[in-house]
Length: 461
Image (cartoon, rainbow, N blue to C red; front, top):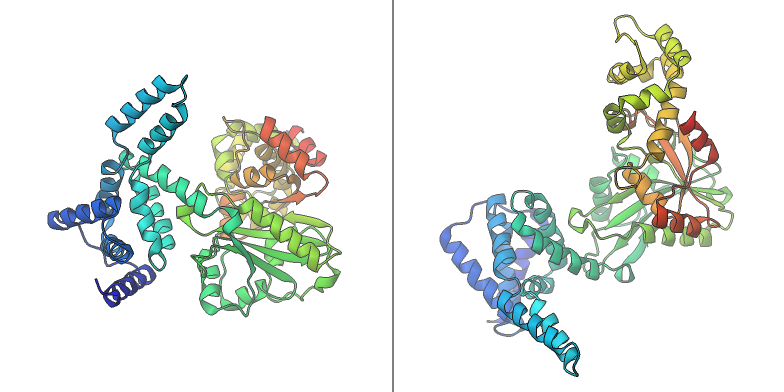
C-alpha cells in the first residue's frame, strides 16, 4: 500500500477526531468487514504501513457510528478477542503440575502468555495514528457510558483502563503553566473543561490568568494540546472565604511577591475516559514545588473547595437536621421567615424551607440559619459513608492526599450552582507540609480524617 494513501487515510481520521462523527448505524456487511480488520489487527498480518492503514479504517468506521453501532463494535472486541479458555486451562494445568519442578518458571511464563488477550494487540494498533491515544481515551469514555447496558463490555473496560494507567503514568506527564499568551486553542479548552466554576467569558479567563494567579496542567506527549487535569491558583495574603470575591474581574490585582498563601480554587479533570487513572495528587505536589521556588514567602497552601454532595446528603438525612439545629435556632428562624413560607415545626422541615434558594438573599433569615447550617456541614464532612470513607468526593481527594479540613465558609458561593449543591457553603482544606505524610498514613490505614479542632467541636455540638 503506497505511503501516500496511508497518510491521506490518517488525515481523514485526524479530521474525524477533531470535528466529531457523522452518526449512523452498523449494517451486516460493515460488521463483517470490521471483524475481518480486527482479526487482522490481532494476528499482526502485514507490516507497519498495513497495520496503520487497518487502524485508520477501523477508527474512521468507529467514529462514524451512532451509540448502537459503537456498542456492537466494542462488544465484538470484548467477546471475541479475549484469552482462549482452552489454552488458559491447559497452561494452568501445566503450571500446577510444574510447581515443584525446575519447569515451574517456564510454565508460569506460558500461563501468563495464555492469559494475555488479543484485545491489547487490537487496541495498541490505534496508538500509531495521529491523535490515536486521544482516540482510545474517548473510546473508553464511550465504554463507560455503554457498560451499564451491556455487562459484556466490562472485560474490555478493565483491560483498557489498565493499559491507559500505564500509558498515563505520572512519570510520562509534563507539567506546564498556562498563561494568557498560551495558544488560543488551549485557552478554549480551559473554558470548555472547567468543571468547578464556569468560565463565563474571555475577560473572566484573562482575570484567572493575571499576575496574581497561576494555572498549571498535566499533559501527555501524545496529547500535547489536551490538558488532562488543571488547577487554578490565587496568590493572596489570607485564606480565601468567598469564591465570588476571588473571581471578581474588577477587584484590584494583588501584588504576587507579597503573597504568603496559595489558594487552589479549582481542580478539573478533563478526560472522562481516564476515570480511575489518578494523577491529581501528583499535580498538587508539583505545583506546590513550583510555587515555592518562584515565591519563597509562601507558607500556606490551601483550597477553597465546594461541597458538591452536601445538600443531597442533608435532604436524605432528616435526623442530621435535628442534631444540628437547636430549639433556639429554630425560634430565630421562625421569627425571620417571610410570610407564606414553610411552617417550621421541627428541624427536619428546614430542608423544605431551603428548597427555595431565595432564602440566601434575605440577610436576617440567612444569619438565623448560619450556625445550624455550619454545624450540619461539619457533621457531613466528618461522617463516613458505608465504606468508612468521607461521603464528600472532594474531601476524599484532599484528605487522601494529606490535607486537613481547616475552615467552613458560610455563603462562600452564592451562585445558582453553589446554592444547589451546598446551600452556598465552601470549605478550606489546608496542606501543611509538616503533617501531610502523617495525615496520609492515618487516612489510608484507618480512615482517620484530619480536621481543625473547631470543625470537630462544631460537628459535636
